[in-house]
Image 1 (cartoon, rainbow over the protein chains, first blue to last red):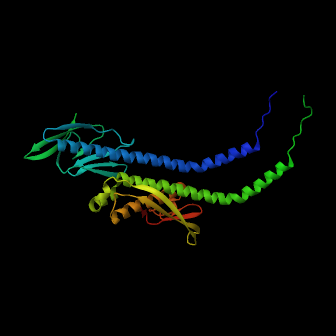
Image 2 (image 1 turned 45 degrees about the horizontal axis):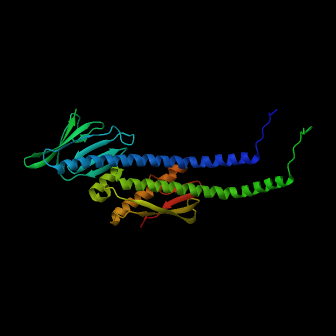
Length: 145
Length: 168
């Protein structure tokens, strides 16, 4: 014969207050989640630029004939990106923002099936090769097919 | 024991008095509570925005236009550095007749031991202030009633401005 239930007024009021507070917090929580996501994108872009720059510096320091193979990720922070290299540094661009990782000043020679210029493509593997050319150190960036 | 004819309930009169009194007290406090809630939300949003600006400065990944400017004139900023938001003060500047809202000035206290030059600190501080104001505008959805620098930022009852960052 348990056909009737009871709910106290205090419980209903408490639930109502909690719902109102929760609604007020939704915007803040959403803002914080966006912040965490943006921080992830920034840190991964910076990490990638530093990783490529560090590998170029290692090959440069190691001397003539040394080589390192690197593979670029498909995406950074779940977003697409651009990466290119010149004799002063490695540049990464993502979501309208740019960062730079410096390298020891050195001549860069870039040969790839995909152009243009010194751009390195996401998801591709490259050989970084240190070779002397006319008495000067040159770092060759070669696309591995 | 079986209760028969138990069709009527009773409510103690003290309970009714207590309920009525609570209702009146809550009604009188609602306005104050909502104002506090709005200010708390704004300061929390400002803190989020300041952290976002500091992250961008720390990782040295900037919007393209800023990046080009720094590369030509302020290259040190394009290097990652440790930048921490220590606290954010909110100063009540009183009622502003132009905006018909209470004006709050936000001051961020930031630590950046690796950055020494004043011009660099000014650039980084401006970014932190911009993101603080932008975050407030986003939370209260008032981007359309302010300018592109979100200066000042608006909420229903307050107008927010930022002062120069205090470097610690």
